[in-house]
Length: 368
Image 1 (cartoon, rainbow, N blue to C red):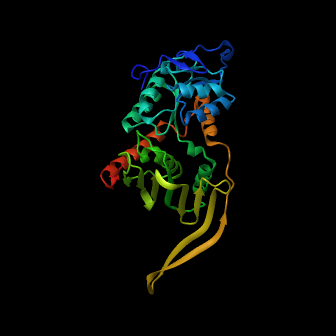
Image 2: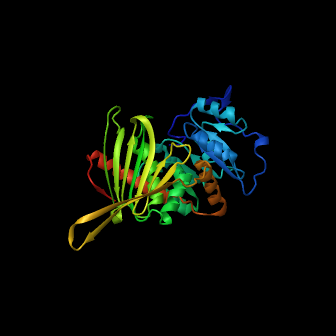
């Protein structure tokens, strides 16, 4: 996707006709401080306003411009951020000398071309999930970012969620014991997408969480599901196999009458339930387990069940996207490597590709 291949309107109405290329007010562009990162945002649809809001609120960051091909979207942006330059021309953002980084908040099929153009123009990149449409595209972007010595972050927002950070802490500390399983449910009614199926729409959240908290590398994927309305899979059940008999299961669904965001994680010592829709006590840790013993004179297994206390650990409440964008700016300013970098995005894309392939083959095991 670029300004040469996508037709753009000649002008955009923002409380009246405004030229497509909007001049930056002198009062809005003072001498740039060395430690202030100026970000151009491409895409102001569903997620873009959240990205703009958080960038705008950071002390060491500024929104340099907002680009969207919808005049209605730019009118919404203008009502909230009247001083920020608006444009429908992607090149205004990609080639602007005062833009240090580009946030790409557009459909996945546009990510590769936009990110590549941004990197080629010397811009750091923050790109919405999923990273790219194919693993080959992801690998090319990773190589380009390394060659240009630029930072690239994939918007895996949930790994900055306080509950997910707490789960990672519990696993790393050994509080749960050896991991047995990761079982997530992410279902609701809609929102149906016209360009991707439910796997590419909803599963990146849980796959990125899984990638963050499970130390082992996945070995194989199985996926089954169904297509009921628009020819794209609208529900899917994904199983991911890991070394050491660790297994993950994801249920993603656009056809559920209720919204559920629940993850169960079972360990040898303890188990936990994370309900992301709970206002309080989102994580509950259960001191429950099973112990199996044998005796030389008894051929059958002896099973005992342990049921102890339930406790809810304190969870950080700061907005995950705010923490993520702070991390992005810190990585750019201080030359650090993002924890959700290109390779992290690539790992999720490879899992999505495997799930898609298995889905098409009605549940065939796909080795990674």
